[in-house]
Image 1 (cartoon, rainbow, N blue to C red):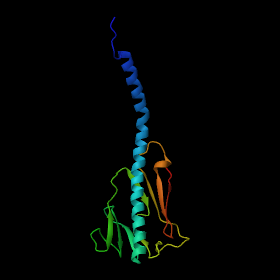
Image 2 (image 1 turned 90 degrees about the vertical axis):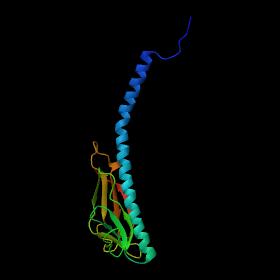
Image 3 (image 1 turned 180 degrees about the vertical axis):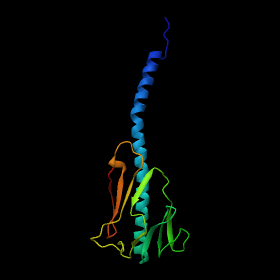
Image 4 (image 1 turned 180 degrees about the horizontal axis):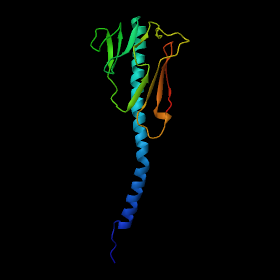
Length: 164
């Protein structure tokens, strides 16, 4: 009698069904992971901007601004940089790449750090500037994918989970 090595049709069908069930369960989780990574990327970009501005203000002993430009890009510079090519610009940050991320809050004017690394123009009792960064299209409310960046008047930067 010969023994045939291989799989039966029923074994292959069961394997395909199990794989389909696992894929159906994993797909929504991957979508949330991708949204979370996009928000994290934007949060890190803002953290880099504010930390650079604060560090440069202390090192140079002068006021350094973080300013939003008309094309949604941001510039860090001394004085009042009008563009990324301005002589007083230290570094330019491109507009967000992800189109399905919402950035709201303190987005007009500029944020100024003085030579002590503190926010200029804000008192301890003032409401600190905040930025809310979250996905635009979220099927299920998930506070893990929404973040709030708060700049304290003394120059510290806090990141907390946002609301839906």
